[in-house]
Amino acid sequence: MSDVRVCAVGDSFVAGVGDPDHLGWVGRLAARSPVPLTSYVLGVRGQTSRQVLARWRAECDLRLPADVDGRVVVSFGVNDTTLVDGVPRVAPADSAAHLAALLADSPWPVLVVGPPPVDDVAQNGRTAGLDAAFAEVCRERGVPYVGVLTPLLASPVWMREVTTGDGAHPGAAGYAELAVLVRPAWDDWIAEPGR
Amino acid sequence: MSDVRVCAVGDSFVAGVGDPDHLGWVGRLAARSPVPLTSYVLGVRGQTSRQVLARWRAECDLRLPADVDGRVVVSFGVNDTTLVDGVPRVAPADSAAHLAALLADSPWPVLVVGPPPVDDVAQNGRTAGLDAAFAEVCRERGVPYVGVLTPLLASPVWMREVTTGDGAHPGAAGYAELAVLVRPAWDDWIAEPGR
Image (cartoon, rainbow over all chains, first blue to last red; front, side):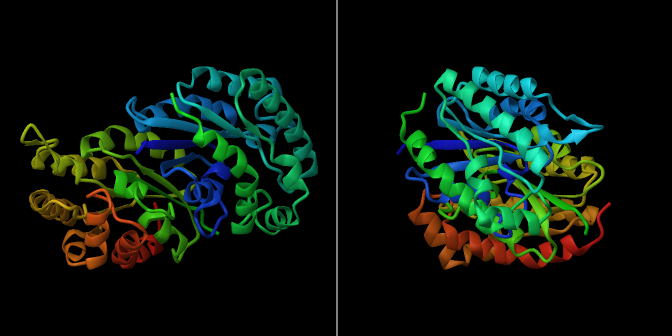
């Protein structure tokens, strides 16, 4: 049996913050993956693409030794678009460059999931810019990208849970919707042979 | 509302390896904790106490900034007792010293969970030695310790799942049993004021 191990790196959405079931979208996908796997959930609250880039490789190196079928799922961006003194925490061009740097540095197959919407129309507008930029970065490199911003903006479940929650994170049903959006790409990606 | 964040550091049992639900005992406790919390599951397959000691602080520092109510759950030891060329990967005195060093270095309240049994009588005997030594290290420092070796050796569910699984890890029911054993100490510990 192949020994597939998946590291999911990113922000609070990757960590499943707000989910009373403590599964998040990553846990839900891992539990229904067509291939048995070990999942390491490495989302950290509040982190921007810059902060994820600074630590992801060391954390994955410890968890994905050379003799296993290692994979990496990446999702970040919302924190990049948060304004501090009227300026985004990370400039959009830098966010895209951070994703490109991560992809260039990864010895493992990567699946990228885009940033989701929060309860802030202006911030969602900035996130839409990142979503498009990330899609382009991935397309150029032949890396699968799942944009979730648009479908989740149209999801009453996601938007209601975010609004009634802390303004950013959904509950169990919202994470389940996100998992459904990612599942087709995940299933294709996990079925591909590893390195 | 207090912002409680728990890092669970350790080995494959902390990571929930073998659980088709991808919750493990940590996810089950987090989902039923009396206090809402963010959980970071930082178990890594195959790691000994020495390897956990080498990385736990850096990973927790990133996830437990000074302005949150940070907590750390620790569990390791089974991999220490694995024989390589007839010698345990980590000598018992070193295992205890690693736990003591972690406790001395932690700025956060710690809960220690002992190593569980596997499908190997001789290894379980070596683990019993660690279990006693870890209990003593924790007692001397006033740190809560939950020994699980003895009750899980007597658990038909745990031992059957371990035996029919990969010889080390249980399935969902076994992890649920482990969570039940840890729950009383977890509930007391999480209810105590943080630093």
